[in-house]
Length: 395
Ligand SMILES: *Cc1c(COP(=O)(O)O)cnc(C)c1O
Image 1 (cartoon, rainbow, N blue to C red):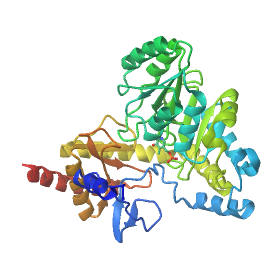
Image 2: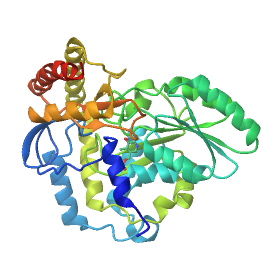
Image 3: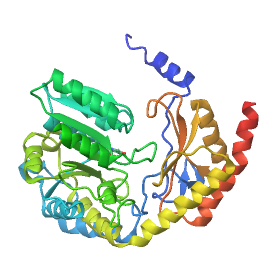
């Protein structure tokens, strides 16, 4: 056989980079059963606790009764149904933009938007810590592709200047995560938006982790900073995180959305998501916008965790979002700490390269409005016990 897969897999294992899929045997929530073991989990992206909410489940059931279970066709054929349309209108309202377009996943929304907007002769510039789906989209687009230093407008400016020399006729699209998915920090959008406007470039923001937790009404990083559609012409959100369901959307001008309907291949050539799912997301959206106590409780837990972790001497990142990674560095050590926590009944996944840069493995703690203060304290207690043991083992 010419494919030596076993050698590849063995090398992956030797590098401490082998991935496994924990089997979740309960609905998403703080208390789960994983691989037969009851655990207190701090690693999903269900930031507002809506993934298993009774009203969202009821909306899904009623949606299935009314609309059936399958989308049945692509949106452009006969798969675009009333619940999809209502959800798009509600998402346009949430984002304060004329229109929003529903995609089946965030990965597809990013691939679709970038490849519809730029191609050969254009330039796409991305933050080097962007989500993999954005990096893949940039590569696939055929545009000149370059990554600027994390959240560094100067580094971006240099690349914009270079691109205007190399591709003087082309368009430039600047792409960034809103909340960085593995670090929890915010893109410096006011500066990036001003830089783009000056240069005649367009800014695209993927706010998968900002919608829900950020903004007075859960409108994400754009609401947090009070930015307009002129500042951020292309705004992406995903529905599988704080919304608790699945899918994604791009929000923007009438012309942008029509362009995507005409040219975004991951939009055109796929079956629409089940309409009942759109019914569930509409209900989740209602809860996300109106139940402010979820954001308030979540923010209190974030403060509690940061204070406690600093007291233990853990290295946190520059984040006030529900993503609170503990920086470890070495992938083997990160896996060991994760394992020690697991032995104490806690689940926090170690995140290793290539998801994060080499030498920056971490435990990605995520908090949710579904957690209680007592549960966060349990995590802190376990960390206080494990951290000195780890350091002693290293010495
Ligand atoms: C999760 C995520 C995506 C992908 O969204 P899916 O709906 O899960 O495919 C895209 N961008 C960012 C920043 C993400 O964190």
